[in-house]
Length: 625
Ligand SMILES: *[C@@H]1O[C@H](CO)[C@@H](O)[C@H](O)[C@H]1NC(C)=O
Ligand SMILES: *[C@@H]1O[C@H](CO)[C@@H](O)[C@H](O)[C@H]1NC(C)=O
Ligand SMILES: *[C@@H]1O[C@H](CO)[C@@H](O)[C@H](O)[C@H]1NC(C)=O
Ligand SMILES: *[C@@H]1O[C@H](CO)[C@@H](O)[C@H](O)[C@H]1NC(C)=O
Image (tube, rainbow, N blue to C red; front, side, top):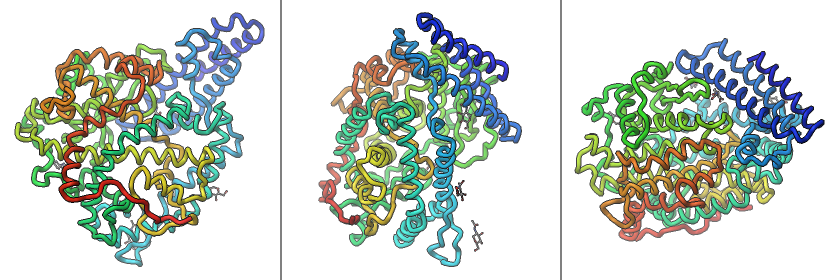
């Protein structure tokens, strides 16, 4: 790597000279520049990936750690050089669209454009926030002499299993008392540095920089997101009313209002439990006596006794769509169990290691065999096909359509595989279990996981973007609660004021983590799913015998071209271009998402009116400026 780095630096200096002495030659050298950038960036990534692979299957060791650090600093220096050259090329005069886009995909410098002291303060500020999150200690509610409880995992474990509302409220309040003001100052500093970084990177506004991965003007993205939120509103309100009614019956009207927003600490726990599948017994399902099916014990009855069996089985699903199969050779050469296979239920997952140079991506797998690992394999194999497909692209395009998109493309396939139709097809559930009541229960759990998180993601971004844009002040705590109330229908459990600082703890561990790509990813996942299911005839609008949630796509070869087109493009086009090419639609269309949950929404409407439950929420006055 060392010698190759020298060569490219030499090459770069030549290009710079050419640019100044003979502008006409520029394009030719630009092509060479880009080729060499692709080559060396790929080399860096593959070397790094080799180390990562070794860490995953052999465990971390000190030598690897040193190698990783060295490599990261070499890469940084190299990218700095690329950017120096890039600064001298007028990218916009490059006529070839593909080349122009490649140049634009060369990694930027981001925070590294800040002055050294600023950068170190920024690092201190962000590390400081994470440290607060990790180290703040609370005293136990049950024993005030024990004062060494951390938020994760101690307090979280307590509140997710507690039935004592006073205990839950106690921790909610304590955590905020202990963290609020020290976070606010750090958050304010972060905002200042972020604004500056946006300008230094050539963006007109901080929000343009925030949404840069979606490659659109921030005003357009903001409008798109509002449209999505508005179309989600009816189903969100329906489920909100149902959940609030459940809470009201459990905790009483002193704590939960029948018509107002529900208390935010209870809603966090409610949604948290849906994600921590382990606590499902505490969720009240629409049909409590028709339990959710759990296929774990059935897997062995259809011959799936280990991870390899599952892999081969899932591979066959993808072959039925037209994909080339991964053969025995692949299994022997490119897969290995994870080093720490005893990881917990929540952390043991397969990981794909994509390589640009070697023939195939590798897979480190979680050797457990259960329902979660079964569905997870559909996602893993989808990812293997994705990275295999976009290898036809130059290195800077060998990537997902936008950050996090891969997750949603994968989920399209586990969504199909978890449909009752597929599970019955392969003998994992009975015909009876594909019935209406089971379907509604399944959709309900999925709605808690999918419908409710979108507005949460939305306000996580909107809160920070509004502050960055100067529309909201860091000291205006009530401004935060207004967003929570408007989009989520939740309010603080106690009176709050501007002297408090309640921005969610998620922001402490990743203060610049951007969530809107997850919203766009989710909408596209269902938009595409609907088109594919329509295309194959498995879904027919308004035909109750062909609802979207039953579609499994199995054996539907006619959908293959669309999927392949999408997978092959990598990041060579914008998401809107790819969306148009694959679905014929240029706008985000939440119809697929709404259609998927339509049977549940209808059920909710009936149930809410049967119980005389008010839908929607009045304004609270919990936060006073
Ligand atoms: C290797 O792992 C590190 C740490 O998880 C990650 O930041 C990096 O992107 C990985 N390298 C590649 C090439 O994926
Ligand atoms: C940040 O800087 C302060 C003082 O300059 C120091 O006390 C603190 O330990 C630093 N925090 C981190 C996380 O580096
Ligand atoms: C917390 O402190 C108590 C004694 O006060 C001790 O028994 C316990 O092990 C400590 N727990 C943790 C997680 O450090
Ligand atoms: C499914 O069943 C298995 C084995 O009976 C059990 O360990 C697991 O917790 C169950 N999973 C869920 C999500 O209920």
